[in-house]
Image (tube, rainbow, N blue to C red; front, side, top):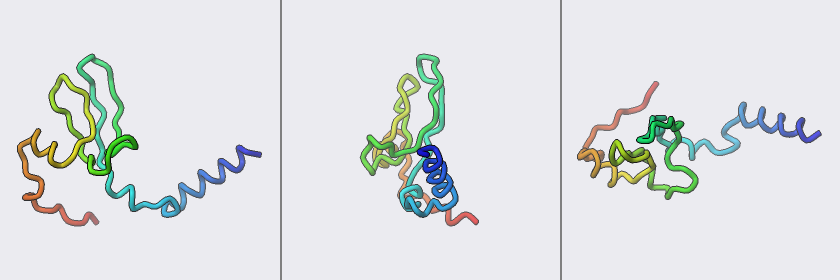
Length: 94
């Protein structure tokens, strides 16, 4: 009985994602999978993670000897030396 309700809930959320609020999904950035300094493969994840502050939307890797993590725009600009505010917006994708 519980399995039927769970399956129905999964189907509804897959067919109608607006029920869960797609506004939150629009602000996520992908941090791609990578091989860490220890040689282990790490899967990708989206920033911010549940444990990150909302402003940590960017994927940062301070050095090749460090693991990737979510960081703020200011931290990313410091690592890359690029002022993201000065870049032109890519516009809407069609």
